[in-house]
Image 1 (cartoon, helix red, strand yellow):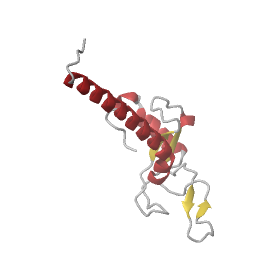
Image 2: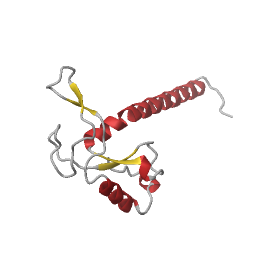
Image 3: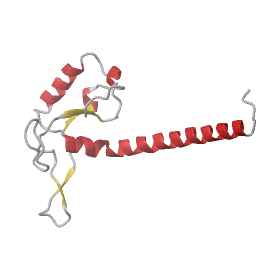
Image 4: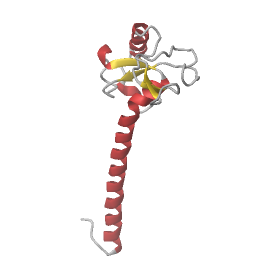
Length: 133
């Protein structure tokens, strides 16, 4: 996944070197290990072991061009230990990050609701002639 502007400062100056090392370790092949849709199987899912997608090639399951990105397994962009990093295709990266993104959205929505409630209470107090200090 592209590095978001607000997270760019969390990455080390030598991130490009780290990325190159991880891609070399992976031999430019996705290091994902997920279930892919298999229309030939009874269950519809087939464990294929390591993902067969190679950087720059068409993805064997989706047909889209593969762009390997580096995933932080603990979702912490400051933890650049090679054991915490994996080269993943778009499909594997999105599959891996999905639950984390859902939890982050849930947390942000709860924070926004709390802020909205506080603002409504503040406005109600002002409307009733309440004092702020």
